[in-house]
Length: 528
Image 1 (tube, rainbow, N blue to C red):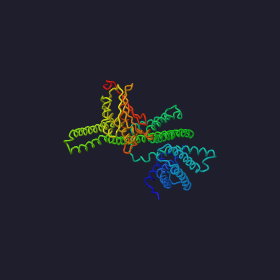
Image 2 (cartoon, helix red, strand yellow):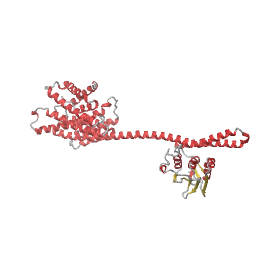
Image 3 (cartoon, rainbow, N blue to C red):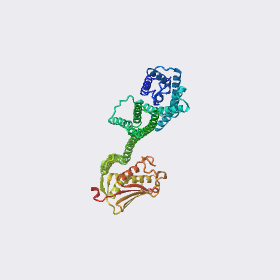
């Protein structure tokens, strides 16, 4: 059993009363609601919003609220038949919209609005047929008169549907919100009144020629407030036109012409308002996705920074640990190993300072901080990087060939970051040779000054090289062929080099050869 809310029924009944009061069933205008048939736009909106099980209750509320306005009908059966037939048709349309086409009653897309307007056209024909064919045969002299009445009533019914149906659907869930008109809302309302005054109030003007003036405030309101504003603007225009036509008592032909113009105004306003609403909803979703993407990128950057710091601290911390174990062993015989112990402690201090510098520079880099540039020679950079690996190189029997093609200008870069880049390339070369049993185990380091003022430094080894499946993603984060590798060394190195205005690339895959360039500004460029 579906629940039925008395608040919903009361709202429907009051809405029907308001529509009946605003309309005059006796006028020549085919804009009025028949006393004993449910208002189609209001009924279809309530069926879409609250469910099809409200259909019999809506008929009952129409009769109940119609009693004080129109009294009891002379013939109950035709009145009940007409109301029931119309409601059954509206239930069928609502069922198709909800269960077959699955539109959103809140009208969130152009598809929802388009199918709703198709249903409104069908509902208007149904309403017109019920009203026209329920009359007595004497109401029209012939078939053509019946058809003329049918078309006239259909146009009026369609206008009511286009005005009432979207208005209720869009604003039904906003009734509890407090609404305070802004200055812009007041000016927009005055613009509609001004357009109506120019169309109907200015003497010696043709109303039909100036009807287009109503499009101006409607477009303004729709562009500013979307479908919500468009539905209100259409309702205000519709009420204003009906009031003027009723007051001036224009003949039926003129009324039908105005109805046709009102149809064009309604379709234009609804589609324009919905287009603006959909565009704004799309922009909001895009902004939300951008915010989520930025958050994800920040989290990824934080994770990458943590991985980078862990990767770069691994070497100095491992060295510190090895030196500390060696120092502990030397303490067993300090008299014999005194000098070596002092040298080892100095190395521990140097590696610890290096670890601190690496962490500070990487943190500053990932925060977007500036580079701490200084002038130093290529030979000094290579010597510092080799010094950290010399023991391992000697232990594994790897030969180092250094070729400095003079003249080489002084580098002007962040010394710690460039040391990190060269250190990563050398470690990769040593790892490649350590995992290979080739008889020739050599690393070639070459530095060349280029004609455009840059310096190119290349590191090559005689190992197996880069696997073919790794070539395309070698510089991607977390891409590695090492069992215990993080896959961040080359990615971080390329980022650091590019931050200096240089490039890092793989010149040859097998055997591996990596090169990077650094610009060397003139002596006075760094002081500008």
